[in-house]
Length: 182
Image (cartoon, rainbow, N blue to C red):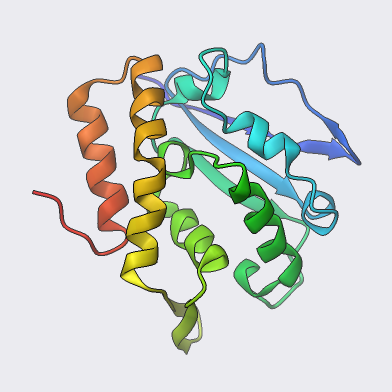
């Protein structure tokens, strides 16, 4: 099986690229969120493309196939979760209930970043060069996952993902929050 990398980005200003004709089957998707979108809190594209709908082409990439990237902050020494505009962007996007747990690659730490941004109890518990430990309530992490499980299952059904692959993905999702599934 050949894995393709597809990049979907906002080319300039508020003009999104068209991904409706892209075949995402068996792809790893690098999904870029621009600084322009973050600073202007333009969540519409992200929310639309992470929606639960049978005509959403991104579903076909399969669970855990999207690696989210925030562009335009290359020379900023802060981590994205330390940027107030990014936190506001994630909070606004999360209000529309995108199914982060279906799309995001668990090993990319995107899910932890989202929970850190939306959590009321989050803090950085340890830091040394090149390594930071994000901390938040396990109840908030469990609530975040719980709110998305039905949508995640629906997306897996739409994409015809095997039960074995779905379980493996969910085990990874739970594991990235330190929760072991049997």
